[in-house]
Image 1 (cartoon, each protein chain N blue to C red):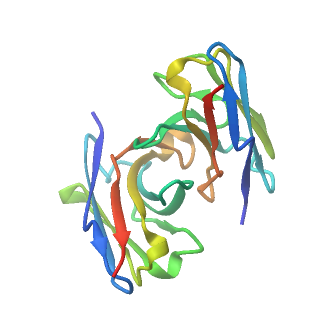
Image 2 (image 1 turned 30 degrees about the vertical axis):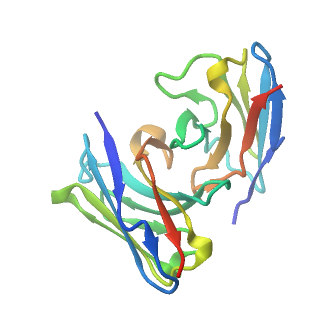
Length: 123
Length: 105
């Protein structure tokens, strides 16, 4: 059974760096074709993809946020970490991590999601 | 960048109705499209991948079609559990559409 869970601060101040951790079980990020992505959703708004990391350590970022994002994985701990620098109130959102089986779906489709974590940016 | 649009933004329907949601890409994306359902306070759920393939466990009343720049998600007979917001997502650039809310008429 695949599960994912996001963890990190619920409140950050403007200009601070956000660090979120996705801890997962039921799959390995060393298995060919597997990836973990981060997606966010501001309150009442649409989904926005942020970043993806694959089994082979290939990394992809949203072009509009690339300069602020870093995604890494720790295969031994079954964790993926996302850092976002220079946080702003507009970054207030629920942040989700999700599983991508690139091999099964022949691309980036997210079949398992964490419950999400609400991050508020405010002074 | 490839942009995704959806229509309508809101759809009011009754139980038993046939519902169709349209997703358009700003340039051809072949069949590289997924559809998700999201209920308030919950994570999205994958319904359709590669434009027309039904995800395992998803009821057969959901179907997807299209290729190139125009795609549709159809619910053949709307059920009470289907009132939700639906998003399309283009594979390669991982771009989501703005969503279509299906609410009760």
